[in-house]
Image (cartoon, rainbow, N blue to C red; front, side):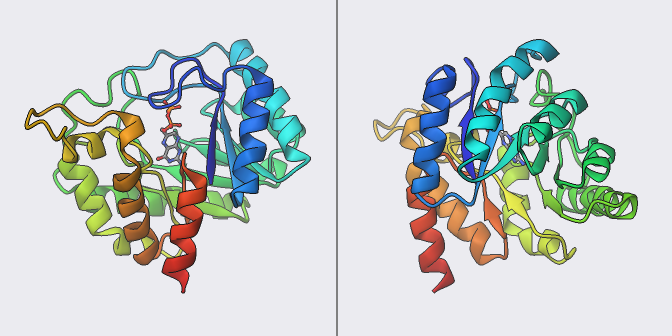
Length: 254
Ligand code: HH2
């Protein structure tokens, strides 16, 4: 799944593809690199991000979804039912839902749905997140949402542990270490680690300081976690660096 952020403020590529023509060109490039799905989003969900008004999110994503749907499969990364509906009308066939609440829309429209686990809201989710048993709580949450969606008539349900969404470094590592428990639920699993902050913390600068490496220097860390996730049974990874992820996936599959 290749990431197409039509946002001015995403954590790793904010502003680079804010112009629709640039976002469309970038999406086509990711398809050429082998992306199976393009995930188009108009609202950053990075920790501390401000919510985006509905009309602004529609204005950002619709032209990009419409143009890219002519070339490949498109998912819409949104928490708003109105945006999901409009994006499906424009050609999207998968709703990537970090709020895990939009299954009724997916059921009604006959499209796929990704249930992602998040603790709290992006604005505050990284303020001291706490779990008694992070793996057990995420597994239970995803099982409950996926079952509800399937019973409501969604035929294509994905589950995603939501790496970095209301989770400390230790929570993220526990979820990756025990990904097999999420895979064992039986739903196809999507994992998004690409360039995320926990990799920056694991890969501090080589100057001996504790400075996390910046997002652009997290490719090796992203690939390591993507290979790990695929090997543990993830069916799809959400990546900025699609060519590298596709090559890694071919080697893992072999
Ligand atoms: N991560 C981000 C956004 N959407 N969706 C799913 N299903 N899983 C994820 O892990 C996930 C996601 C955050 O990454 P990015 O889109 O690069 O940044 P931003 O949220 O700042 O747009």
